Length: 346
Ligand code: AFP
Image 1 (tube, rainbow, N blue to C red):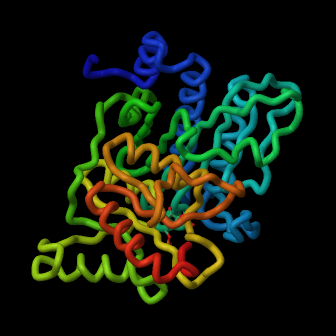
Image 2 (image 1 turned 90 degrees about the vertical axis):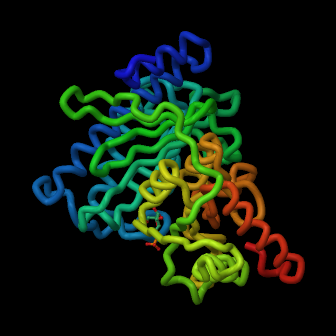
């Protein structure tokens, strides 16, 4: 491909080679356009009156930022009229969003976290948008509303996944099931240009991403692994590790895609009834598809994240993803610990 392949050209060539249906190509282009609009709002900051929080809470009980709601609205308005979607679901909405009756419905479901890492917004640290694409199950009443159960598909059923990262550069990282591509926004042209043709995660790493302030709440396998990394070259892993934590999954996972690492958000006893903080359908699953397509691994400590059969739309999950060797190690530590502690498996 030429050095200046745009997202549109990439997608058209995917369709021409029969790898990507035209309807899915259109979906990705609409989402990319919406991400450019979100980027425009994010970059305004205080000048746009978009910083700060609302008084409302999302279904997670989290206070919504103004940009959370605005980003959600941008994605809904950009996607509702095109005829490519049967419905949408979002971290910011309790129920699925039904396509208004005046618009045709399509064969895909779009699930997203419109603004991941929004706690970073007010302090000018990178944030992003995460999206996942599923095929809508066959149904008799094609005009009727879609309930949660249409979305409850394992991550292995995703037909596409991606994220936008609003940082020093604005990028769109995308997988259609045959590798991971990174596109950088040319702000003068307003086009996403292919800059990372085949993103691959190194199998080995010496860098981990984790919120260490939660250490006292973790289970033994996590404590064992983190202690071994902190022991450095004198310890059992025989090398020194570095730590990074930006507190926006998109930015931490993007760094791992570019230079390796392991991202972790374990279960912890602050909310013992929840398997983790991060959400399966619109954070863990799309990022797991991208990580696996880039040669990495993604588990909940016990099984592939993408094998988990969801039971609710907003369910949470523990997350370990990134360089394959490290993810396999911490997963092995959980599997060794589990038989003696069956009631503690999350
Ligand atoms: P916010 O969207 O509320 O900022 O949460 C971001 C996030 O869901 C994920 O993107 C981060 O990796 C993780 O939470 C950070 O969690 P902590 O703030 O507990 O470190």
